[in-house]
Length: 207
Image 1 (cartoon, helix red, strand yellow):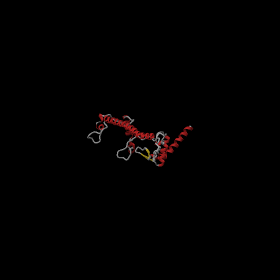
Image 2 (image 1 turned 120 degrees about the vertical axis):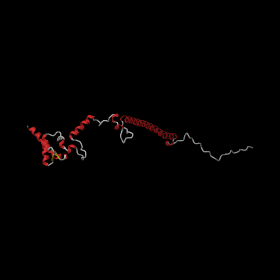
Image 3 (image 1 turned 90 degrees about the horizontal axis):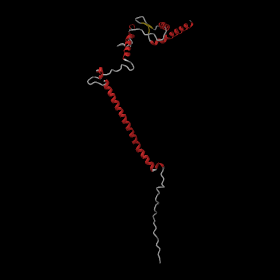
Image 4 (image 1 turned 45 degrees about the vertical axis):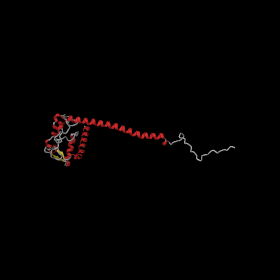
């Protein structure tokens, strides 16, 4: 007689093993995408830092070269404060030892001297101690008179002079030369001169 034994059965169910190859990830959660983002976050700041460091080094070199060039030029021209002097520079204490500076950009020494001589001759210089008045305004008789206006005819000048006299806008200097009180009042007498010029043109046409 044969006895059949029932084989033991397990009461526990083993869960199926997941298939990692078949598992799908969203694009933003894919391991390769995450790795790329981390690489970019690490590498980009390093690249920017290296570039900025190189630019800073170049600027530093240029700044040093500029400062050195300015120092050499200051030593050459004596544009440095002297020791033991109150605010004086080397080229001010010993001007003969250093190259002279140009008196004015674009003008030669001869031009500046000629302009100064002309200002002295015409009195076109501010007087010391006077409130903004020039020498030819304080003493007009001592200096040559200025022309009435460039481009005016004799007829215009005479007409404007007569109009200024009629309006009481004239004063007489020591040399009996009539002068208008205020230059701004010339607007009142200018139309008379223009009419006189027009009349002169008409007369020339009629001749």
